[in-house]
Figure 1: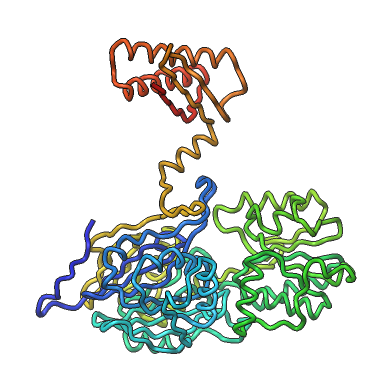
Figure 2: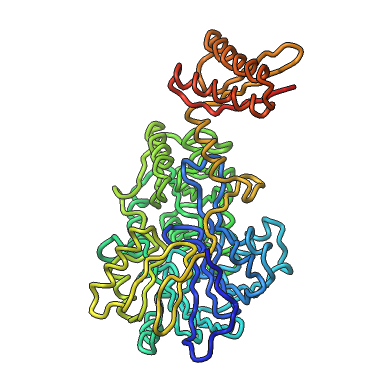
Length: 557
């Protein structure tokens, strides 16, 4: 591991910038990047990721920030690109552990951040949030100048930025697609990217999420047209789920419901929270007020549309509770229609399929991609990625925001263009990437990785604990308690191992007791006696049952 030196640059040496991804590189989620020039650091975003199925009991995953904590005095400012969880969700866990510095972001982004921080009891006075327009320039420290520019995505106020440093100019797209018909009519600022390309872009960081997809990503306007055509033909109640943060989609659904003479009911904490913040800040308009679920009694079924959480099959979401009959106020019935205006995030396919199958069993009509074109990604496909590369004309290229296959395909795409970058790197979290006019390479690493959030615990769960949880779920658990006085004997308790089996229990006790008695005869330390009991029972259980339950040996002297 290396830590970039604080020593001043040798006289005559070319100035260099260090780009240090701490999350979001080689993965999708928990985005956070540090830029360092000499004795100053600027940070971009601080997101989270959601656990995969094998990460049992984990609520959230946030990035490790050891490097930032070790260099806390060098941090001069923070910028936020947009308000999605994978870019701001880690802030309540990270900001309190670092010095108070200016945090710059657009209106909706900071509105969502304030809402999130307030849930954690973090008051406005404890952070320094500074709102910017998406054309503003801000100075961070002595060496960093940031110019924001608009990029279309699935949430308003989404920004890319130009970072000007003594070592050169960095253009970072942020998350984007080049939607020519965005819901708010505000298209990506391609003219600014083109001008930057003419002026000279040293390094481009660009969204790689859809680098494997040919063509262009479907416009949000087309999704809206498809949704309206579908909803216009439905007769009963309609339940629609999408990402709560997709404010454009939700606004379009609200407008469609109004035109189709349906009243909208918002269901789900995150859906209501995003809608409230967007309304308050002027990013969402309501033709009619939302109704509560207990206010629709006087309406006919074809006059109601529910917008609810649950697009990813989350067990406690509204759609999951409806599918399994656990909602306190609403029950699905034949004649209802459910629209999933989303795709499963990788790792959530099983949960989403479970909900869909349950909905079919109830007898409701279910509409979801790819059978119905009711969703579009917020990330650009190959044509859009090529457009950015052609406009920016970067000297160096760093594919970002994607797994290795996305990064590599993005790099390959860049090499097919008329003016490919001079050099492209496929980086990983923790890499220290040196950028100068004459150099572009990885020069070392810093600590990076995942911190697990489990209930109120942050970072107290490691991979070893997760492995134990997986083993317990697959093989069960066997607790052996050896009481040494007055006469040695062993008690066992098992869960998830085998059905109650007195003969097997007796055999396990016998094996454990023999190991204990031998250890006592040889006057071993109690720790060694315990380990002997563990080893003997482990071998016996594996031989007799073919299983490897988690064994917990205890000795009471």
